[in-house]
Image (cartoon, rainbow over all chains, first blue to last red; front, side, top):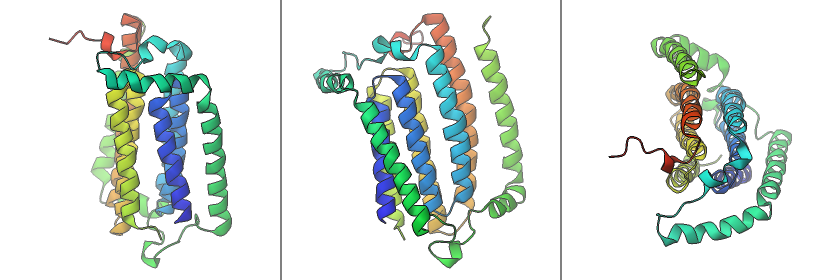
Length: 184
Length: 100
């Protein structure tokens, strides 16, 4: 329970960091923290394979793709596109004023460092006390999310959807290449 | 053993933050990240309920959602790149060609 609370706190604060950071780079890195925390939660949920996929696909591929795009279109210079613009009523502009002040204090770095240390400490604590090891909880849940169980289900009951995802990925790849070609 | 409802509450909070991010931010990249956050919140729900009901369906569904999210990010970021190249902005207020 304690471990869950720690991870939940990190996930929520990281999510908050994504939506209030002024710079998209900070948002992307907070997003990475959020995804890593969710991977830890997946392990607590006996979904070891999902945790691995979460780290590889989300934290590895998707966040890196985000970072590439942020860097390509000039991450730090997005100020004018980034403002919580007017035309939203006074409530929003009033809310953005303290937000702007705090960003000048460099709070994302401090918050991110604290959260990352907390995440590391939580994972370390969970590993040492065995709370993150497989087979915690009920005996019926043992091995439920293992690679073996997922693989058996994917290649028998879910074979057609699994094969269709390959077509989806191919279409996505072709679409991305066509859209991002420089000659348009 | 953490009760399933706690995971559902956490998931709801994360989803709400995603919705708030989509609504209050004007930077298309951050809106995109918020969408990803919402997808992740739903994935957490699936995984929690998969353990709650001791079935694998939820986890398989999470895998499918991850595949869709990966394809979506690839295409979406390509669209963002195209918009930035053509209109030189990431502010969605400036992208109003389809507005009536």
